[in-house]
Amino acid sequence: MPTTTFPTILAIDTATEALSLALLRGGERRALHRVMPRQQQQQLFPCLEELLDGEPVANLGLDAIAFGRGPGSFTGLRIATSATQGLAFALEIPVVGISTLETQVRSWQRQNDRKENCFVISAIDARIGQTYVASYIIEDGNPRSLGPAQLAAPAAVPLPQQMRDYSELPLYAVGSGLEFGDDKVPGLERLAGSWPEVLPEAEDMLDPALALLAAGEGLPAEAAVPDYVQQRIGWKTLAEQGRRA
Image (cartoon, rainbow, N blue to C red; front, side, top):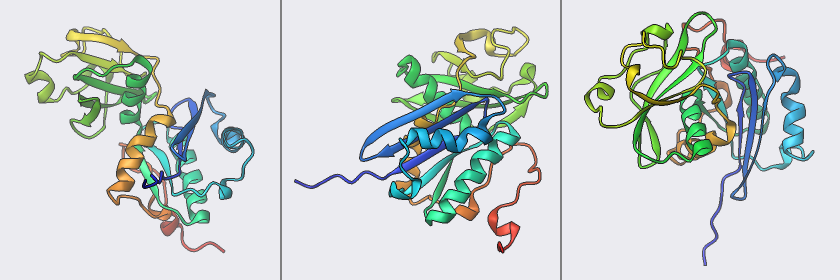
Protein backbone atom coordinates (compact mmCIF):
# COMPACT_ATOMS: atom_id res chain seq x y z
CA MET A 1 0.00 0.00 0.00
CA PRO A 2 1.24 3.54 -0.71
CA THR A 3 2.66 5.47 2.22
CA THR A 4 1.19 8.90 2.97
CA THR A 5 3.83 11.56 3.47
CA PHE A 6 2.91 14.35 5.85
CA PRO A 7 4.70 17.70 5.66
CA THR A 8 6.42 18.88 8.80
CA ILE A 9 5.27 22.39 9.71
CA LEU A 10 6.04 24.69 12.62
CA ALA A 11 3.48 27.42 13.42
CA ILE A 12 4.21 30.58 15.41
CA ASP A 13 1.78 33.27 16.56
CA THR A 14 2.44 36.23 18.89
CA ALA A 15 -0.13 38.68 17.51
CA THR A 16 -2.03 38.98 20.79
CA GLU A 17 -1.09 38.68 24.47
CA ALA A 18 -0.53 34.95 23.94
CA LEU A 19 2.53 33.03 22.79
CA SER A 20 1.24 30.20 20.63
CA LEU A 21 3.26 27.45 18.96
CA ALA A 22 2.32 24.25 17.15
CA LEU A 23 4.08 21.46 15.29
CA LEU A 24 2.74 19.05 12.67
CA ARG A 25 5.09 16.11 12.26
CA GLY A 26 4.42 12.64 10.92
CA GLY A 27 0.72 13.43 10.89
CA GLU A 28 0.73 14.14 14.64
CA ARG A 29 0.14 17.54 16.19
CA ARG A 30 1.40 19.12 19.37
CA ALA A 31 0.81 22.63 20.63
CA LEU A 32 1.80 25.09 23.33
CA HIS A 33 -0.40 28.13 24.01
CA ARG A 34 0.18 30.49 26.92
CA VAL A 35 -1.05 33.97 27.74
CA MET A 36 2.02 36.01 28.65
CA PRO A 37 1.66 39.72 27.84
CA ARG A 38 4.94 41.46 26.96
CA GLN A 39 6.95 38.27 27.48
CA GLN A 40 6.75 36.68 24.04
CA GLN A 41 10.14 37.88 22.84
CA GLN A 42 11.95 36.53 25.89
CA GLN A 43 9.97 33.28 26.07
CA LEU A 44 9.53 32.30 22.42
CA PHE A 45 12.62 30.14 22.06
CA PRO A 46 12.46 28.63 25.58
CA CYS A 47 8.83 27.68 24.86
CA LEU A 48 9.82 26.32 21.45
CA GLU A 49 12.43 24.14 23.14
CA GLU A 50 9.73 22.92 25.54
CA LEU A 51 7.36 22.14 22.66
CA LEU A 52 10.08 20.13 20.95
CA ASP A 53 11.19 18.34 24.14
CA GLY A 54 14.65 19.76 23.64
CA GLU A 55 15.10 18.46 20.09
CA PRO A 56 16.95 21.00 17.92
CA VAL A 57 14.82 22.73 15.30
CA ALA A 58 17.38 21.76 12.66
CA ASN A 59 16.66 18.07 13.36
CA LEU A 60 12.93 18.28 12.70
CA GLY A 61 13.12 18.13 8.93
CA LEU A 62 10.81 21.12 8.63
CA ASP A 63 9.16 21.67 5.27
CA ALA A 64 7.82 25.14 6.13
CA ILE A 65 7.06 27.61 8.90
CA ALA A 66 3.65 29.24 9.29
CA PHE A 67 3.42 32.56 11.09
CA GLY A 68 0.57 34.72 12.29
CA ARG A 69 0.88 37.62 9.88
CA GLY A 70 -1.70 39.79 11.60
CA PRO A 71 -3.40 41.97 12.22
CA GLY A 72 -2.55 42.37 15.88
CA SER A 73 0.00 43.95 18.17
CA PHE A 74 2.74 45.68 16.16
CA THR A 75 5.41 44.31 18.50
CA GLY A 76 3.89 40.85 18.49
CA LEU A 77 3.76 40.71 14.71
CA ARG A 78 7.40 41.71 14.49
CA ILE A 79 8.39 38.99 16.97
CA ALA A 80 6.69 36.18 15.05
CA THR A 81 7.79 37.45 11.63
CA SER A 82 11.40 37.97 12.68
CA ALA A 83 11.63 34.53 14.31
CA THR A 84 10.07 32.93 11.24
CA GLN A 85 12.40 34.74 8.87
CA GLY A 86 15.48 33.83 10.88
CA LEU A 87 14.62 30.14 11.18
CA ALA A 88 13.41 29.76 7.60
CA PHE A 89 16.43 31.63 6.23
CA ALA A 90 18.81 29.38 8.16
CA LEU A 91 16.98 26.19 7.19
CA GLU A 92 16.32 27.30 3.60
CA ILE A 93 12.61 26.49 3.77
CA PRO A 94 9.50 28.45 2.71
CA VAL A 95 7.09 30.34 4.94
CA VAL A 96 3.35 30.95 4.85
CA GLY A 97 1.57 33.85 6.51
CA ILE A 98 -1.81 33.08 8.09
CA SER A 99 -4.44 35.67 9.03
CA THR A 100 -4.78 35.93 12.80
CA LEU A 101 -8.46 36.83 12.42
CA GLU A 102 -9.15 33.65 10.43
CA THR A 103 -7.11 31.63 12.90
CA GLN A 104 -9.26 33.08 15.69
CA VAL A 105 -12.39 31.83 13.93
CA ARG A 106 -10.88 28.36 13.54
CA SER A 107 -9.86 28.33 17.21
CA TRP A 108 -13.43 29.21 18.20
CA GLN A 109 -14.77 26.42 16.00
CA ARG A 110 -12.46 23.81 17.52
CA GLN A 111 -12.92 24.91 21.13
CA ASN A 112 -16.71 24.99 20.87
CA ASP A 113 -17.23 22.19 18.33
CA ARG A 114 -19.07 24.58 16.02
CA LYS A 115 -19.71 23.01 12.62
CA GLU A 116 -22.93 24.65 11.46
CA ASN A 117 -23.15 27.12 8.59
CA CYS A 118 -23.07 30.64 10.01
CA PHE A 119 -21.53 34.10 9.83
CA VAL A 120 -18.73 35.08 12.19
CA ILE A 121 -17.24 38.47 12.98
CA SER A 122 -13.67 38.09 14.20
CA ALA A 123 -12.11 41.03 16.02
CA ILE A 124 -8.90 41.83 17.90
CA ASP A 125 -8.56 44.85 20.17
CA ALA A 126 -6.20 47.36 18.54
CA ARG A 127 -5.79 49.14 21.91
CA ILE A 128 -6.20 52.58 20.37
CA GLY A 129 -9.95 52.89 20.74
CA GLN A 130 -10.31 50.81 17.57
CA THR A 131 -10.57 47.20 16.53
CA TYR A 132 -9.13 44.96 13.83
CA VAL A 133 -12.05 43.14 12.29
CA ALA A 134 -12.93 40.78 9.45
CA SER A 135 -16.11 38.89 8.59
CA TYR A 136 -16.43 35.25 7.57
CA ILE A 137 -19.03 32.80 6.38
CA ILE A 138 -18.61 29.21 7.50
CA GLU A 139 -19.79 26.63 4.98
CA ASP A 140 -19.20 22.90 5.37
CA GLY A 141 -17.01 23.64 8.37
CA ASN A 142 -14.61 25.98 6.58
CA PRO A 143 -14.40 29.75 7.14
CA ARG A 144 -14.31 31.90 4.03
CA SER A 145 -13.42 35.58 4.19
CA LEU A 146 -16.07 38.09 3.10
CA GLY A 147 -13.51 40.85 2.67
CA PRO A 148 -10.15 42.13 3.86
CA ALA A 149 -9.36 42.90 7.48
CA GLN A 150 -10.13 46.47 8.48
CA LEU A 151 -9.45 48.90 11.29
CA ALA A 152 -12.61 50.46 12.71
CA ALA A 153 -14.09 51.98 15.83
CA PRO A 154 -16.08 49.32 17.75
CA ALA A 155 -19.31 51.25 17.17
CA ALA A 156 -18.67 51.49 13.43
CA VAL A 157 -17.75 47.92 12.50
CA PRO A 158 -18.69 47.38 8.84
CA LEU A 159 -20.94 44.42 8.10
CA PRO A 160 -20.65 42.97 4.58
CA GLN A 161 -23.77 43.12 2.46
CA GLN A 162 -23.89 39.33 2.36
CA MET A 163 -24.45 39.29 6.12
CA ARG A 164 -27.34 41.72 5.71
CA ASP A 165 -28.88 39.85 2.79
CA TYR A 166 -28.84 36.36 4.32
CA SER A 167 -30.22 36.95 7.78
CA GLU A 168 -31.40 33.33 8.09
CA LEU A 169 -27.85 32.27 9.01
CA PRO A 170 -26.90 32.85 12.66
CA LEU A 171 -24.34 35.55 13.37
CA TYR A 172 -21.64 35.09 15.98
CA ALA A 173 -18.76 37.26 17.17
CA VAL A 174 -15.41 36.16 18.53
CA GLY A 175 -12.36 37.91 19.95
CA SER A 176 -11.42 40.84 22.14
CA GLY A 177 -12.07 43.66 19.71
CA LEU A 178 -15.81 44.32 19.91
CA GLU A 179 -18.10 45.69 22.56
CA PHE A 180 -20.28 42.61 22.22
CA GLY A 181 -23.97 43.23 22.65
CA ASP A 182 -23.55 47.00 22.42
CA ASP A 183 -26.74 48.16 20.68
CA LYS A 184 -24.80 51.09 19.21
CA VAL A 185 -23.16 48.71 16.73
CA PRO A 186 -25.51 48.59 13.71
CA GLY A 187 -26.42 45.05 12.72
CA LEU A 188 -25.05 43.37 15.85
CA GLU A 189 -28.44 43.38 17.52
CA ARG A 190 -29.05 39.98 15.93
CA LEU A 191 -25.94 38.35 17.40
CA ALA A 192 -26.74 34.78 18.40
CA GLY A 193 -23.69 34.56 20.66
CA SER A 194 -20.29 36.09 21.41
CA TRP A 195 -17.00 34.78 22.73
CA PRO A 196 -14.74 37.74 23.64
CA GLU A 197 -12.23 35.50 25.43
CA VAL A 198 -11.17 33.62 22.28
CA LEU A 199 -7.61 34.13 21.03
CA PRO A 200 -5.96 32.78 17.87
CA GLU A 201 -4.08 29.54 18.59
CA ALA A 202 -1.20 28.27 16.47
CA GLU A 203 -2.53 24.73 16.10
CA ASP A 204 -5.40 26.19 14.07
CA MET A 205 -2.90 27.61 11.58
CA LEU A 206 -1.75 24.16 10.49
CA ASP A 207 -4.64 23.24 8.18
CA PRO A 208 -4.63 26.53 6.22
CA ALA A 209 -0.84 26.29 6.05
CA LEU A 210 -1.13 22.82 4.54
CA ALA A 211 -3.61 24.12 1.97
CA LEU A 212 -1.37 27.03 0.99
CA LEU A 213 1.66 24.79 0.62
CA ALA A 214 -0.31 22.29 -1.46
CA ALA A 215 -1.33 25.17 -3.73
CA GLY A 216 2.31 26.16 -4.18
CA GLU A 217 1.91 29.41 -2.23
CA GLY A 218 4.89 29.06 0.07
CA LEU A 219 7.13 32.15 0.14
CA PRO A 220 10.87 32.57 0.54
CA ALA A 221 11.91 33.69 4.02
CA GLU A 222 12.84 37.18 2.86
CA ALA A 223 9.29 37.76 1.60
CA ALA A 224 7.63 37.26 5.01
CA VAL A 225 5.84 40.51 5.90
CA PRO A 226 3.41 41.27 8.74
CA ASP A 227 -0.03 42.64 7.91
CA TYR A 228 -0.53 45.68 10.11
CA VAL A 229 -3.77 46.59 8.27
CA GLN A 230 -2.74 50.16 8.98
CA GLN A 231 -0.01 51.68 6.85
CA ARG A 232 3.23 49.73 7.15
CA ILE A 233 5.28 51.13 10.00
CA GLY A 234 9.00 50.67 9.80
CA TRP A 235 9.09 46.98 8.85
CA LYS A 236 11.80 45.87 6.48
CA THR A 237 12.08 42.43 4.94
CA LEU A 238 15.48 40.73 4.81
CA ALA A 239 15.80 41.77 1.17
CA GLU A 240 15.12 45.42 2.10
CA GLN A 241 17.61 45.29 4.97
CA GLY A 242 20.39 44.45 2.55
CA ARG A 243 22.99 41.74 2.76
CA ARG A 244 24.17 40.93 6.24
CA ALA A 245 27.81 41.16 7.13
